[in-house]
Image (tube, rainbow, N blue to C red; front, side, top):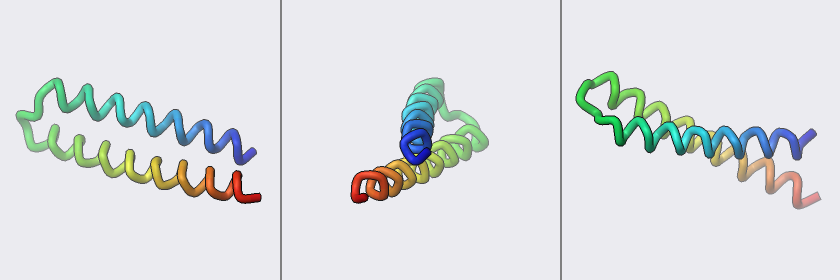
Length: 61
């Protein structure tokens, strides 16, 4: 089950990275657009931390 969670969080991290790049390339004219970019970055950091912690837990045992 931990391996499945690791894969799901890794896919979420990659998807958030792609969305962040696409959103940034489409232009950041409005304040809401900049806010969404910040949320994408925060979620990307959260997903990276989860991937790291799950992988550490999975491979240390």
